[in-house]
Every structure is written in C-alpha cells, then in structure tokens.
Length: 413
Image (tube, rainbow, N blue to C red; front, top):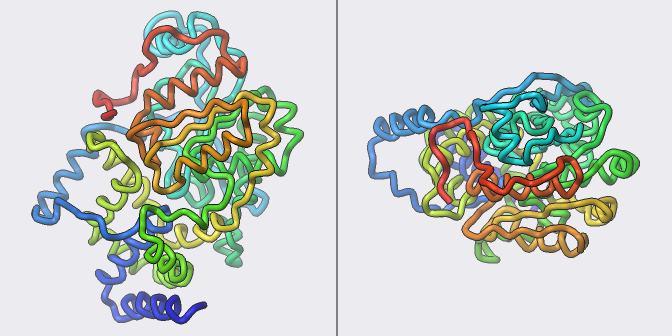
C-alpha cells in the first residue's frame, strides 16, 4: 500500500474508531458511490432545505411511483459455494385475448404467441433485479422472463465465500452464479441474455466458461452500459490527477470502511442528501428525470451495504472478457449505451460493438449509466427488436410499446 493510501485509510479508520460516525459516514457515502463509479464534489441544491422537509419529500417520492413493486413467481438457486440466489419468473401468457397481458403482447409483437424462449435479465453493481422495472412492465405476459439478484444484492443471500473466508468476488464467480440460476429457472429451451453494467460482464463470463451453452441455447444477447475490460482507465469525469489519487487510496479505504460497516451505514444515512446528489449525477444525464425515478435509483444503491461495495470493487479492475465476445459473433446482439455514461463510458460499448461488427449499436443521447430507467422506452423498444431478430417472437409492433409501467407516472426523456 502506498503512503498516501495508508494515510487515507488510517484517517477513515480513525474517524470510525473515535465514534465520529457522521464523519465516517460522509466518507462512506462518498467512497461507496465512488466505487460504483462516482466521486465527491457534487453541488447539492437541497442543502438549504430543512432536514425534516427533505425527509417528507423522500417519503412522498417513494409513494408517488411504486417502482420496483412488480413481482413474479419466486425461486431460489444455489451457487457452488452454497450462496442462495433469488430469482423471479414472469411467464408468457399466449392465451390472453383482451386487455392486460394480451394487449401488451399485441403492442409489442403482434397477435401471434411468442416462441418458447426465456429472457434472463442480469442487473448491475449496487442495484437489484428491480432496476429492470420498466422493461419488466412492458414485457409482462409477452415472453417468459427471469429476473435475478446477484449475490449479496437485492433479495439474494450474502456471498458465502466472502463471509466465511474473505474470498474476493470475481466476475468469473458471477458468471457461474448466472449458470446456477439458468439451471434452476430455465433448464431447457432457448435463451436471450440481457445484462446491464456488471450484469453484462456476468453474461460475458458465462460465455467464457460455458461456450457450449451459448452455442446450443442462446438466441440473442443484449449488453447495456457495460464493458469488456480496461475499467481501470475510466476517469468518472474527474481530472486525471484526481482520479489517480482516488484509485491509489480507494482499495484501502474501502477495506477500512467495510470493517466498520455498521458505523459507516449510520453515518451514510445521516448524509443522505449528499449521497442522493452523487447518485443522481452518476446515474442520469437528463435534467428532467422524474424525481420519483431518481429516488428509486437512490433507494437501490443506498440499500447496498458498504462491506458489499468493498467486496465487489476490486473485481472490476481484473475484468477482461474481450475474447469471450467471440462466442456471440454469430448471434443477434444489441449493444446499447448512454452517451454521457460516466461509469462505463460509451466508448467501452463502442469497443464491444467493434468486436461484434454484426451487432446493433445504439447510443442514447442525453442518457447516463442507468439508461434503462432514464429512457425506458428506447431500451424496451430495442430489446423488443432484438427478440424479433433472434426469432424469439414473430413480428414487431408498429405502434408504441411503452405500455403499463406499474405506475401512473412516466419518467422524463
């Protein structure tokens, strides 16, 4: 560990040990989101508003849009190390003729029933399966879908290896977790794999480990806001000197924070306004994002414990799955990114598309890292088109596909 890294780690540890939980929590809030691709220095316009009023506003936003409330049939898979992996299945409803699922199916694909395919959605770092809320709402009843929570995220169990002996999380481990979910939730039949950010890396790891599965069963792949490697070069919108300093101290600081998780979480809650501002900057690019959607993203990210943030962060520097993309070369592939993504910049998606010249590359203007929440209609439209190209459904709809989002409010953009 470098001298500067050791000094930063010592400073955070001292703050926690001294009982200065607010100071430690502020570090936890900022550093925790830096690990997800953010940095401090965000202007928070709400600092002049009373804390009680801000709390009431957050509660009102939580109630205004039941984002993340959609549920399917629950199931459990078990990873090689015994970690419990939670998933939900949304079955297709080919018999529905009017309203509800049947109407959504017609809007998406026409009147014919879809082919017996399962679409498996893998979410990103510090998120959960609920991050696919709008796509889930639009696809309900139209095609069989599986949504799952990565280990230590959402409703899945804490990683057994990490808790028992401190084994670092790796992207390869996540690929094997995805295989366990597929074996449990979709053991037979064709597949379409969809991954956002870390979820896209998980899909690449699965292909690297199970090329026969890809060759025999996978009909299409969607890689949203993700990277095949070289994440250590991402600057998160910071000056070069600043990002280099963050990289030097971050691993040690995260370890220190993870060791005092309870204290840091208490402080993180106390600094919720700063945390919310950082999340918004690094999740979205649009100025008119629905505040309830921004709050929904905030809830998911702030729900990820600091020790989980610390466990996962080192895996991204080691991630290199460019060679694994070759397994997708003969498949319909969608590569989609937000033009202003500061976490996994769009040039990483462009590099993926360069290795898959037959892929459809979509760059979404005025969009950040959480493009599927910020511009859900664009993402859902391109996913529907991918399912058509993959032969999972017979025809594309000629009318709008936005459909029922599970809320009366629609996001900006």
